[in-house]
Every structure is written in structure tokens, then in C-alpha cells.
Image (cartoon, rainbow, N blue to C red; front, side, top):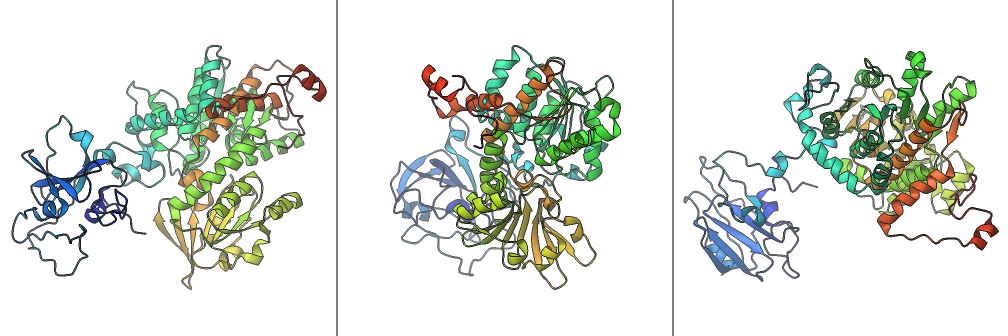
Amino acid sequence: MASAEAEDGQLSPRASLNHGKPLHPGTANRPAVQAYADEAILIDEEVDCAFTVADKHPLPTVVVEDMSGEMELLPMKSAMSSRRPRSPSTYVPDVDATGSFPPPSGKRRMSRDVTPRRKQISFMDERRGKTPPKRSSRGRRSVSQSSTDSYSSASYSGSSSDEDDVSPREKHQTNSKGFSDFCVKNIRQAAFGRREIEIAEQEMPGLMALRKRASGDTPLKGAKIAGCTHLTAQAAVLIETLVACGASVRWCACNIYSTQNEVAAALAEAGYPIFAWRGETEDDFWWCIEKSISSEGWQPNMILDDGGDLTHVMYKKHPHMFGMIKGIVEESVTGVHRLYQLSKSGTLTVPAMNVNDSVTKQKFDNLYSCRESVLDALKRTTDIMFGGKHVVVCGYGEVGKGCCSALRGLGAIVCVTEIDPICALQASMEGFKVVTLNEVIRQVDVVITASGNKNVVTRDHLDRMKTGCVVCNMGHSNTEIDVDSLRTPELTWEKVRSQVDHVLWPDGKRIILLAEGRLVNLSCSSVPSFVVSITAATQALALIELFNAPAGRYKQDVYLLPKKMDEYVASLHLPAFDAHLTELSDEQARYLGIGKAGPFKPNYYRY
């Protein structure tokens, strides 16, 4: 669908006059300002007057204000007909009896030396107590204030800045205090990133409560944490919580497309060594990891990882440093798999905490977060309608369950591929058809991988897809889709928008590949801050536990989060829902054989 916005970030003239939504019931033909505005002034730069359409004036009246400030309440028809063109050569469309603009007739005449003027919207509260808005000079593009002082969209779309072609590694940047031990896209975006962090804090009550409770005791005093996670506003809240608990940190991104540049700038401005920007190359990615590990006079003793890349680099390239680590906290299935491999081979020399398989991560982040963010990512990138579309989700774990639930809710016809008979039976009993990818690959409209495996979608599958098929990945690893097999001379890549590519076959067929096979929800959209608060609080508690554990409590192995800690994380978030827990009586606690304060379920319990 065509956007209602002009390229300069303002509403087009026709879109600003009529969004197709009436301000009052039964007034569908009324020229309307933005539907969400209670009161706005529509300034027509071709005439010396402004029209105020306000809910307090019943149809069909309009307030006409000339530039001298005089105002008069006129009927809609009279107000519209009172507009005076600047010159006979300037065409101003009239309105019909219903108050709507007629469609273009093709007979619009305008002299060649007259440039059509855009119309703009300004809000009433911006004008109260101020001088009337000035009209821009002819030919100058008017830019709204919100478009000039907000970089929020830069997190999820490309930027047209002249500095985009310059690698941050080639820039010398310092923050306002002269600190320069960081590498971000643009330190000048720090103020906007700080606003995003403040918004995230409001939706992360559990983590903020943990910060308030733990900061006084500084349980991480002396901890030096090397972190490698998605660098988003939610991760920034976690980083600042760890620092409030006494830790010092150095941080990089675990995904080359998920970094919010303005958030990275805000952290750098606050004095944290941050090495991340959106759109890193593979070489940049490994360079940033090295910078977060190595620093003169600073050596990490804790690792917080998402994917295992930082752990892998330290294990392979800095074995002496790896041996001094007190603990590793890992939150992804890929990273946990690597840790279990090291443990099995007897080469894991430090204790590690498996956050990925904790209840609070599996049941909330993997399920509820993905249920919302998968739709956000697909809508932002493709604008497609899901009703009636055939979708195959590869994997019916917690992530797959969330994706299937969301897609079915929009009317998509969803089928599932699985290797696990238990997960396959769950899918079947939820009403999803369980198939192999080969059975449906020629008919599906959307393919979503959510398995954490390798080469789930191969070149053979990609060759047999129909034209227009959307392909994306919701699993952590970027190996689920064989993207490298598409980088061949016979195939053509067309960049459509940020994180969206068309891959064209010689016969004209094309598929739509999102985020080059990387994690689509964090690369192309955002995730709910509240759910991230649950996972982040779990990570923080795991770091506190490993750092303060007495010698001998944890051996050189991989551990699950204690059940009591999972329950504590959940309890931190209940006040946000005004939820009240029932307390066991002494008799009931004895009957169940548990303590009145928990833990309430055994470790083998499946929620």
C-alpha cells in the first residue's frame, strides 16, 4: 500500500486533508486532519489563511483564521469557498456539497513558474502563547520537529546520512567528558538513545526492582563482565543494572543487525566501553568481540554471552584469560550447546549457568516474546496480509509455538515441521498439520525457521519455492537457512529496503529474504521490553550467584538456574499486574512436603 507520508517525513497534501477516517460518526466525507489529533491547524501555504478543524465544532463548521490572527466561525461550505488564490494561475480545488474534495479531473492548470506547495500540520498546543507559524520560503522543504530530533527509526531501517559509508572504526569519537574507549556509529545520537532507555525502564519493572534492591549491597563489586548480547534499549537497562550492582563492563553485540545505534551511543556517552553498531561486517563483528575482551589494565572475570561467540573467542585465542573466569552465563540454545560440548569433552574449565533452559526464559522470552515480535518483524518488512496465507514453521519448540499461535490468530494457514515426536504430537493436538518441508515447499507463502539447527532450509528448497515466498529465521543461529548457497553468479540480489532483499532466479522467480537469514525479530523490529525484563533479571541473578558462590559449590560444568531463583524472578514482575499470591497454610505445606516460601515445584516439573 502506498504510504500516507511524503519522502520528507510529512503527510502528503491529500493524506493530510483526508485519511479516510471521519473525526465524528457519520462524517465520512468531512475533510479530516490526522484521526488521532483532537485539535489541529491545517495551514495552506497557497492562501493567507488557516483552517482549524476541531471536535468542539459540529459539522459542517470550520474556524477560519487569517494571518492577522482574526478568527471567524463559518459553515464548511462557506469557509472552503472563502479561500483566495495568490494568483489567477494558481488552481485551488473547491469542495462539493458534502464538504469533500473532488477527484483530480486532469484539467488542473498551473503556470510553469508556480511550484505546488505542500501542506503541513501543526498542533494547537505548539501555538498557544507563541507567534503564528511562519510560512517556509518557496521551494524549501518543510521538516517537522519530530523528524529532526528523533533517531528511533534508525534502529530498524536504513539511514541516508552521509556518514553511513564511513566505518566507525575509522572515526575518532569522544563523548562530552573526553572518554574515547568505545566504537559506535555516531556519538551525537546519545540523547535520543537515552530517551529510548528511559522508555524501556518503564516496561522493565522486575529488573528495575532488582536494581533498587541489589544496588545498596553491590553484590557484583569487583566483577569485570565481558558481555556479548543484542545491544538494544532493553540490554542497556541490564548493563546499567549490573554497573549499579558494582560491576565494571565491556560490551559488544552478538548480532550484526540488531544493534540500536542511538542506544549504543547513549551507553558510550555514559562512559561504558561499547563496541557495536548496526550493519557490522563479519570482520567488524570479531574485532568488536576482541575489543570487549582485551583492554590495558582490565581483564574480565565473568562472561555474559548470547550465542557463545565471545566464549569461543576467549577459549580459543585467550586460554590464559579463559582460565581466570569465575563463571559464564549463556542465554541462547546455540551457546548452551557449545558449552555442553566443552563439558562433555572435559575441556570446560569454568562453571557455566544455562539460562536458556530456565523456566523464565523458555516460557516467557521464547514463547510470549516471539509470539508478538514475529508479527511485528514481518509486517514492518513485507506489509503482507496473513489471512489465508500458507505458512510453514520449522520447529515447534517454545519459539515455534509462539510463532504458530500468532500467525493462526491473523488467519494464516499454518503447518509445522518437527523431528521430535513429542513436539509433533503437541502441534497436532493444537490443530497444526505436521509435514516435511519437501511436501509443502512449492505451495507455501512464508517459511519461518525456529529450530536452532543447521541447513534446515537448503538451496534445493529455495530453488523450489514459488515466486514471492518470504523466507526468514526466528532461531538464534544464522545457519538455519543456507544463505551462502544463494551468493552465486546466476542469482541476482536486489536490496529492497533495510534488511529486505529480493533474490532473483534467471527465469524471473524471486524470493524475499529477511535479515539475510539472521534473527528476524531483533534485526527487523523490536521485542516487548516486559518479557526481556524477565530474562535480563534472570541473567543478572545468575551472574550474582556465580560471582558470589563459595569455592566448591559449582564445579567445571553447566548448571541450570535454581528453581528458587526462577520463582524470585517471577515474583518481581507480579506487582505490575496487581497480582496477589495465595499463601499456603502450615498444614497445606506439610501435606505437599514443601516450604511455605517455596520452591513450589521440583526441578523435573514441566510448566
